[in-house]
Image (tube, rainbow over the protein chains, first blue to last red):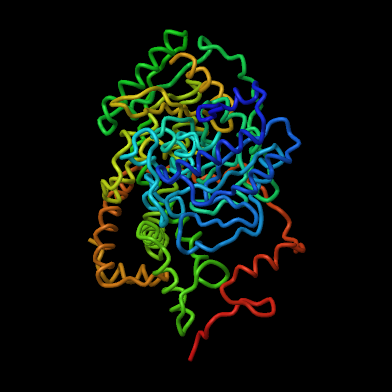
Length: 457
Length: 91
């Protein structure tokens, strides 16, 4: 049997042998991952053994981004500084998945410390987009997206700080979900921007994403920012009872014209199915990206101070303590990580804090308020996920050009809102994702609407 | 434009050792990023109140035994008798 295109709803219905299923993915990884380079480590024997001894009727073969801790497994976050780091405990999402019958196939490639939009910032390898191998899979969860799109895994977990699940999902033609901030525990996720980071699933269908989200979500005493999301009262929602907001700022010239056209086609289909469409304005959208590129690096500069060669990770030899810090960080951190640490350190430094960090936090509040107001008039928002199509590997975009990849995903991150990317077709043979953004904690509404979108394509 | 001296100062604060060449490159990169984020200065935020997330929960500050202590220590590049070993701070 070939399970490359298998979806979670299909797996639930069919009677598939656990061992055969897991063996299929492991064989696919062994035979084909040299082409995609999605995986940094593969747990072949352990996964097979677990599959053969599993008591569950259905197991879930899943790939995990390499910034999520699996006990006794190497966890690198794509960085040389953690190349030999072995996780001492399980992330909460890992414990929850394990209880639900997940079998971990391996750890996936990523931009170093999740900083990037192409996975080219990984210090280990370059991952290719299974839709077009000359192109990047997006990032930072590029390995997780490529693993699902190539059929090497049934599903995967990624992490999203400013678009790192949604953008690669869009680039690889699959579904990716960033839950409301706090919906999923961050315990055991290597921190990047703590007020933004969320773990989210990547799958082939929205139902699959919802299935995994239901396993990993929920309050966790080990992460006091976790919150309870709204119960799913939307399972029978109909198009005619939905008002969809179209924020005009997401359809401006910065966004590829063909992508805009494709998204507008979907909006038209939703209208034909009975949805009310309302054009709205979110004037602070354009301020999202600059605010993000102060807030995220600021938090990163603080979070990454721990990589100093003392308590864990690599250490470079030197005579004095300060030299150990500097040499360790110099040798084992990549250019993009250093750049963000520099921006963040500058933004938080004495004399600049008010002008940068505090200002950005205020703009963030404006963005939050603006969304809140919009959701008094509309139920969800439809936008493109990315402003451009997947770019070529090695195009060597300047840092700022690369940052523009996050243009349409960052506002929902800053506001902590649930946001889903659903594949809606192709232009120039490359996938396009529709982003569905919903009100705070209405993750289930976003997912239910996502399922309805799949049906009208 | 941000000066080389400022770049050096930030690198020092961040405990990053940058070569002259890296400083020059970083200066250009930082300059373009800082120019970009400069847009925010034009946004009127006088009336904005910063709200703490409504969901902030706090736990009691209690010391608890952790079964992980040994495992975590084992990750250290250098440790002895339950302590992390570091180099001298002063001569």
